[in-house]
Every structure is written in C-alpha cells, then in structure tokens.
Length: 221
Image 1: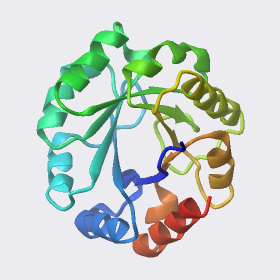
Image 2: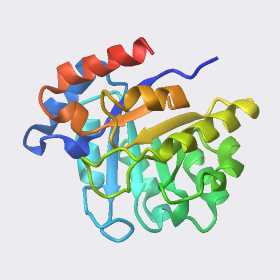
Image 3: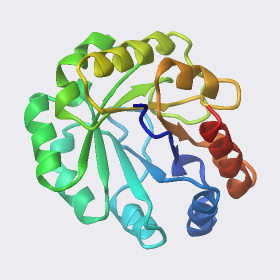
C-alpha cells in the first residue's frame, strides 16, 4: 500500500509581515503539514527562527507542524519545541552522537521522529534507523538557503530509501526538501517520496492557488 502523499509548505519562504494569513491560505489550498525550518547559523550558515514563531504558527492552524532542526546538539531543544506545538521533529543524522537515543527521546514526548541526511551524506547511513523513525528526509539541496535548484543526484537516494522501507515491510514516510516545483515533483514522486516540502513554489504568489495546484498534482500522481 502506498503512503499518503502530503504537501508540507515551508514557511521559510512566506511573507512574515502576514505569516498567519500565509499559513491559512496554504491550508485552505489543501496543505496537510506546515514545514518549519530551524537554522542556527552554526550547522548551516543561515539563522531562521525558533520557539516563539512556532507558538505563533500553532495558534493559527491545527495542521501538523513538521519541525526540521538544522542545528547542532538538537537534543537540547527538542522538549521545548514539543511544548510549543511540534507534531513531528526531524533531526540531521550528521549532528547526532547517539541516534537511537535521540529518536527514542522524540517519540517518548508523544510526537513523530524524523531523520534527515544532506546531499553529500551516503544514503546507506540512514538505512539502519528506518524502523526507529516515522520519516526519512532526503535533502535535495544543500541545507541553509531557500530557492536552490534540485540536485539530480538525490533521485537515486530517494529510490534506495523507499526500496529499503518496502523490503523491510515498514510504513515510514519519505520526505524531500529543496527545489521541488512543477518539473521536479513528478521525479521525486516516481522515486518514492510522499511528503513534499515546498517553499518558494507555494509562497511565491498566491499561496492558496499554489497549494491547491500542487495538491491536484499529488492526488493525480
């Protein structure tokens, strides 16, 4: 059975002068998740936002908040992000000293756990953890900045992870983040991704119309 296809618009690309309206528009267009990129200026070069913004977003939507921690020592902040409304917390494998412990910690707080890998990280490093997480995030651009072009080399990584999940009889989701648009969406869907992060593609222009458009593509995959 195929996993449900889910649209997760990234508010990193939203207009923060009217963030609540932007989130509501994406949700009206059909978005099931709202993607929340946390960047610390250390693990990645950019700095984004943290717990106060997450609480604000939580107050305007009941959709799942898909929190992506691009930070060093993520364990220090997981509990606070959960208190502020996270439904799913994804951490980068590259930042973890004890991955199993971190995944158990996230799940013990009553939320889903995800693991992310960067484009330069071997896809095989994530395979041993598939049964310990609810989602694998394949970064399809280098983390830290929005608006980048999709890296074609990541397509095979998506396929390898999806095949491994199927072979193990798991229901783990496969999320992709970076450079997803009308041209690349069919590519990642065919490879096996089912949770689709989109920033500029949704929030550049009319978030409602854009989300609606991509939801139609997901439904007609």
